[in-house]
Image 1 (cartoon, rainbow, N blue to C red):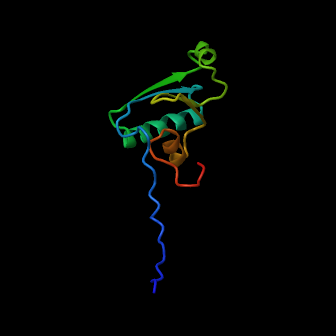
Image 2 (image 1 turned 90 degrees about the vertical axis):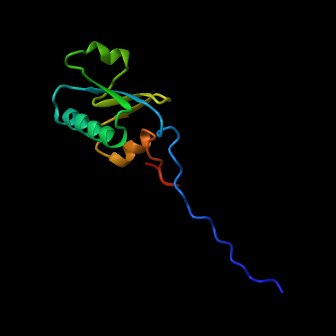
Image 3 (image 1 turned 180 degrees about the vertical axis):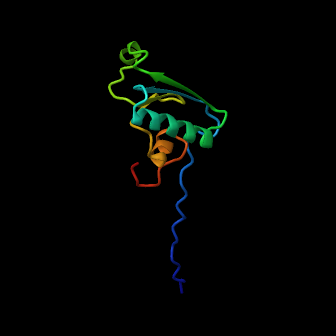
Length: 118
């Protein structure tokens, strides 16, 4: 007689981020003066980088009130906008960067849970 054995699915393990373990991050944050959204975006990205990328990031904050010509060159249509130059591919993230989980996924620091879009 054959024993009735239930097949157990292996536990779901979140996928590891692709490059975050060793990557250096080059980030440019475009803001509009000292508006509340700009101030929040600066604080949020600095906090996230210090907590998750200590010593592995370069953050340049560009005030488009002081350097408006840079908006056209980078095709900035809304502020605040974070441009992630490295690690590749180039990514643009618009908003005050307050959704930490979503930002971690977009920066490839943490992978999204299976089947869930962030």
